[in-house]
Amino acid sequence: KKESWAILIGLLDNKPYEVFGGRTESYDLPDKFTEACLLKHPRKYEARYSLELKTPDGPTVVRDVVKTLSEPHYATLTRMISMSLRHGVPLQYLVEQLQKNDDEGLQDLSKVIARVLKKYIPEGIRREGNCTECNQGSLIYQEGCLKCSSCGYSKC
Image 1 (cartoon, rainbow, N blue to C red):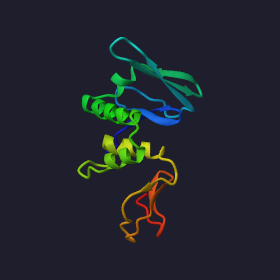
Image 2 (image 1 turned 180 degrees about the vertical axis):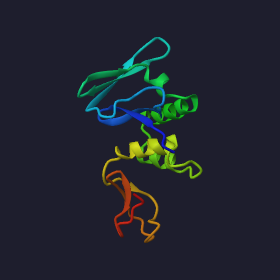
Image 3 (image 1 turned 30 degrees about the vertical axis):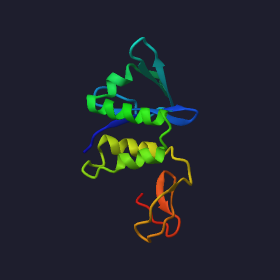
């Protein structure tokens, strides 16, 4: 659909801890940046977040990430994903649930977030169920994709 999305993954101990995301129509995100830091600014009732991007031309700061990225239904989805991450829901289960809705197109937010989160699933995690090609129960995550260790089939 030629839509531009930004998905920000906050890490704690190098594991996904929170997610922000939405369309990038409301601001220009530099195409190339080498590093970024998501900063939480606590307040009494509601925290504010800013994103500091380190670009070759110097730092760029995107202020109030939550309001910049979010439309109301996107904010609800990302808050629920973040809450799940904080409370220990295994990442592979979140990814599988986000990918389940076949009525949504590949470009919809839940699918976009799933593609980003897949990169953080540790290598070799097993998934219950059988391979759709060889009917063996040997599905594992490799390089962010679900692969059959028996026949090598993968949707990726």
